[in-house]
Structure formats: structure tokens, C-alpha cells
Image 1: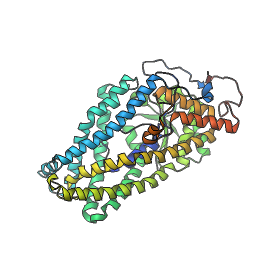
Image 2: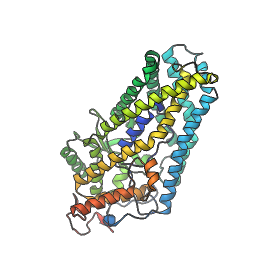
Image 3: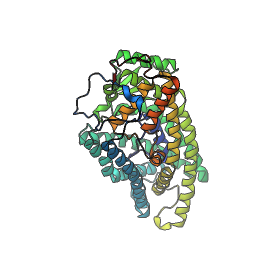
Image 4: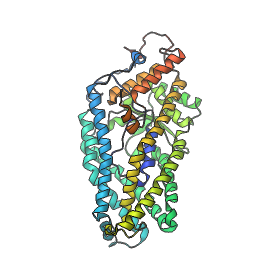
Length: 454
């Protein structure tokens, strides 16, 4: 359910970065929502034993607090800076001749093409990871700590970064080796195979992520709340989702941010709720959140995203081929003997990084469309607009997401609709159906119960 998360430094292969970004967006689901209190719930603050619904959620969009604006605006700037920093680091590696020097150094150990490519990809990943580590540490740890979200020590945080790096090294080495086989054997048509390979890796990550990668970072256990589990599974079965278990994950080990998702493909589907969300959301709010996530599955958003990205990746790899060949031919001083040589990898990544930056607004627009559809699905599945609006308000309040976002910022940077527009969507749905507080947890027109508050 997280809408406006932006990619920061990562060890994940850049050649599939575009596809991976969309996968993360979709897996994140319903997206962060809006809020009305000034500070997030942190690990040091007491959390109410019984979460309550915000009864006034349908009465309007709350104002943004200064703290929300500070946190959100900082994230916007850091997101853009992180992209530009990645481009700058790669440009320096290419222009300085460091990329070609790295190839000559690895040639001391082997001349076997595939092994040389794997070693080069590993070395390049480590180099760029180290170059981005200070920025990643600031955005992912120090700043999160300052705003009361991060619960880990720096050592624990760095350990998770190390795990992510190892997973990225393994996937990237495999991806790049196959990619360079295609470049050597297919010549000027390699970009077609490269696009297909990017999509294949996206599907692979979506399939193995929930059951093999995610457990490396957190512990997943069956949902302890049996009543909530039965309610969610009943909804899932009504929507044709083949699920027999709901999992809760100890996300609070890392952060106080909340989320929930339905992830997996081809038999690896999992319904997952963060323990942070269980502490702060009522069963009705959680049902809407899961209804939204189930909407992604039922409406086949993952496969629609794969189809959309197939076109984007095809264009991206074609551009990489044309631009890279022209640069190599016109700049012999770079020391890149040809596109099939490992030293071309930083240039390939650089062109693709620029392409990703330029196409991100279009990808975000596509993703926001899917998110709106999932919101509508969740509303129709639960018939509970009050719970939806209350959930969105809590997302903003607890995660410091802005309700009122500059339209241009939303168009350029947001992968999900703004929280304010999503609250208004729930309000419009309530008006169109004549509801005030209807849904699975309360009858229309009922007075404040144990799940409501003003």
C-alpha cells in the first residue's frame, strides 16, 4: 500500500532497474495514505491497545502539518538527488577510463568471456554501491532515525544492506552474463533479447521474492488474530484468490512504517500484513487495505505492468544499443573496445539510468491508474468508505505523507495517487452510495462504536 516511495541506492542490476522499480511499486500495494497528527508513531511512544476508526474521516481532507511537509519535501529532493548521483557516478567511471581499467585488471585473473563478465559486473556493483553508501545511509538510516521511524542500530541496518547487496550481486552477475552472451551472438539485435531477459528476470523476482528473498530480512508467521485471519481469507476466497493463510511480518524490527501486500506469482502468492499496521489499524481498515491489495491480483495488474514494461524495456534497450555504439565509435579515448566487452557495462548502465529517469513520470502515471483501480476495487469489495478514508488518514499521519501535494510533484514523482485525492475518492464513493459509516464492521448510520473516534 505504499504510494510515494522512491528508489534510493541499491545493488540491484540497473539493466533491469526499470522492471524492478515497477515490481516494487506493485508489491507495495495500496500506498501510503494521509494523516492529521503532527508526529509519527515511533518505537518509543505508547501505542493504543485497541486501534480506533477515525469517525470524521469522511468530513474532509485534514491539513498538512509542518512535520509532514518537512519529511515529504526532503524525500522529494533526496529522490531526485539520488538519481542524479547515480548518473554522475557512472559518468565519472566511463569518462575517467576507470571502467576500461577495471576490465584490464580483471583480465589478470581470467580470459574466459563469461567469467570475466561476471567478475566485472561484481566489481562494478561493489564500486557503485560504495559510492552511494553515504547517501543511502543518510536517507535510509540517519534521516529515518531523526524522524522516529528507524528501529535498528546502524550495525543491524548495515547488515540488511549487506544482505541486499549479496542478493543483488548474485542476480546481477547472472543477468549480465546472459545479456553479454546475447550481445556477442546476436550482434545488433541483442537489445530484443535484452528486453525479453529483463521481463523474464522481473517475473522471476516476483515469483521467488515472497518465499525466498523476503524471509532473508524478516520473520513471517501465520496471523495470530484468528478472527481477522478468517475475515481476510473469506474476502480472498470471494475474489477467487487461492490463499489458505495470512502472514504477519515483523517489519517493526526495521521501521515503524506500515504496509500490507499480496505478492507472488505462479503459485507463490502470499497475503502479508506488517505488524506495525496491526498495531494501529482496526479490522475494518485492514480489510479495506487487503481489499485494495487483492484488487491488484484480481485485476491482473502485475501482468498488465509486465506487458507495459515490455514495451518500455524494448525502447530502453534499443536506445542503449544505439547511443552506446555511437559513443564507443566516437570516443576511442574511453578505452571501450566494443559493446561486447565488459568495459561497456558502465556505459550501458549510464544510458539506461538516464532513460529510466526520463521515463519515470510516464511509468508513474501508468502505476497511479492501477492504484486508483485498486482503490475502487477495495471500496466495492468492502462497501466501507469510512474505513478507507480512515486508513488513508492514518497512513499520512503515521508515515508523514502529505495530503495536499503539488500537482506537478504528484505527476513527476508519485507512483500512487496523493493521499488527499484518495481520501476524496472514498468520500465521493460514500456520497454516491449514500453511506456514512457502512461496511463490514458497522451498519449504516450506526453511532460511534469500539472502532470509532472523533
